[in-house]
Amino acid sequence: MRSFFFLFREFVESLRHSRFLHLTYGAQVTISLLVLGIFFVLLVGGAIAWKKLGDQLEIHVFLKDDLSAKQINAMEQDIGNMEFVRNVKFRSKDEALAIFSARSSTLELNDLLENNPLPASFVIQATDPEHIQDVVAQCEKLTGTLATRYGSQVVEKYLKILMILVIVCLITISLLVLFTYSSINNIIALSVYARRTEIRIMQLVGATWWFIRWPFIFEGIFFGFLGASIAYLIIFALLVSMKQALALTDLAQAMPSLGVDESYLFLALAVLLVGLGVLVGFFGSLKTVNNFLSRELELQLESIRVRKQLK
Amino acid sequence: MIKFVNAGLTYPNMATGLKGVNLHIEKQEFAFIVGPTGGGKSSLLKLIYRDAVATEGKVLVFNKEISSLRVREIPYYRRRVGVIFQDFLLLPQKTAYDNVAYALHIRGATQRQISTLVPEVLDWIGLARKLKSYPGEMSGGEQQRLCIARAIVNKPDILLADEPTGNLDPDTSLEIMELITRINERGTTVLVATHDASIVNRFRRRTLVVRNGEVYADRREGGYHESPEEEPHA
Image 1 (cartoon, rainbow over the protein chains, first blue to last red):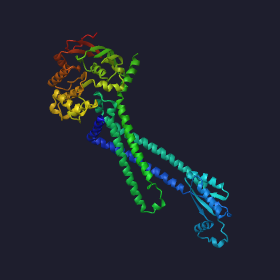
Image 2 (tube, rainbow over the protein chains, first blue to last red):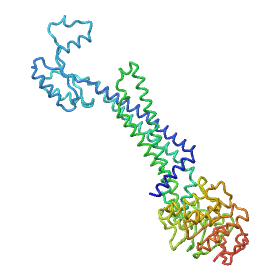
Image 3 (cartoon, rainbow over the protein chains, first blue to last red):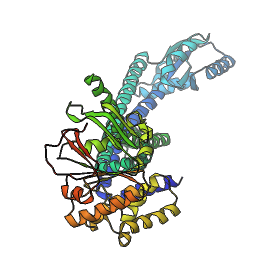
Image 4 (cartoon, rainbow over the protein chains, first blue to last red):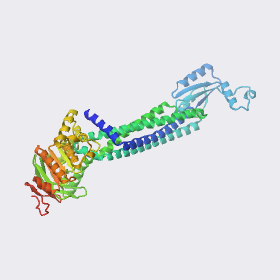
């Protein structure tokens, strides 16, 4: 514990002495995580928006005309109990006609037809677009079902695009994580290199590897956390101001699910940035200091190699 | 205390640092290692403080073969071997006090031990008034004294000095050598690598002449004349 406090003080001292280097260090980590965070929001926000669009896809189950109210109620209950059904709503023949009339404002169907030819229906929303086809298959088995309609081509296209979007998201975020890791690693390496004499002195006076590593690890974690927090705050402020700006326009009505108001997106972003910043800071500094320290090991290996060659 | 048995050091590029070295340094002994630059003086010291590993023969310190030390054992071994260099290797952002205290922190010393030992050592070394000075504010001689203070604060069994007077004027060099002699009188085994014949001849201690990676002469009576005719050590 004594050593821990000493090492922590060493880390604070080092921050005080190499201000410029640490400023560069902090800026680099912040920028890397900011770029990652912005891409994350764009990609995940886009994916959420697309997913929400998919949630609006509806299944129409048209009913036979001769069904009694009791049978319709039973059917509504059956559908409501089905797996993957989020919402079911009954649409009577009259409602169907009213909707149809509203869409074809030039025609006065009531005047043309004596009887309403449109069937009553259930309008169903699945829990997620991937299971629309499962719900349709179950509905088709019901005796009162006349026909089903769900825009099969639209659903297939939607699912295809969703899959591509998810793959693109994963690849891009993975690449960005790698980019962030290597750029933070480089700056840590620079910091370690600037203090190579200090490391050498530590080794010569008998410091253990962990004693040498800790101040650098503190540094890595500190800048990882600080950079992540600043990047998060910047993105948070950007999104909030974007949301406020959008609220003043019609765009807010047109695109209600841009992901801006998704609290779990903010949580995921915070976890991603802080987690990544801290982890990369920890492992990056550990790896870089180890590269310096492994000289002890290399000497031994070199000696074994040369001994073999001499034989 | 230190034993070289047919020890050699060949670098990865197959350049020879040392070859066939046989020598024995007793406990509390003082010895100079002399010879021209590039002759192998520093390589010999490096083999002792485990900054190089023998590629031939054996190097035994405290009856243990140094090349067989595990990596995690090296720091504990080095705490028993103090090293001082020509270029001091001090921490410029730390005061004289903190530079010395650093070596004690590494051993896990308590604050009370540190606050007792550091002023004591700095006083003994002649730097009592420089506790709060930074290395940059000190003369070359003072910096070397500070380096010695750091090396001896843990009371090492062996003190190795690689050209300790290389950057100092003759008077200061003499002061530093007198200090090193006093350390030896307190019971520490001392090995000093130097190419300064005047110092070697003035102090008259055992002298090992190293040339072209070999120990050419081992003079118990001391003295060095820089003459290349000296016979190889048997």
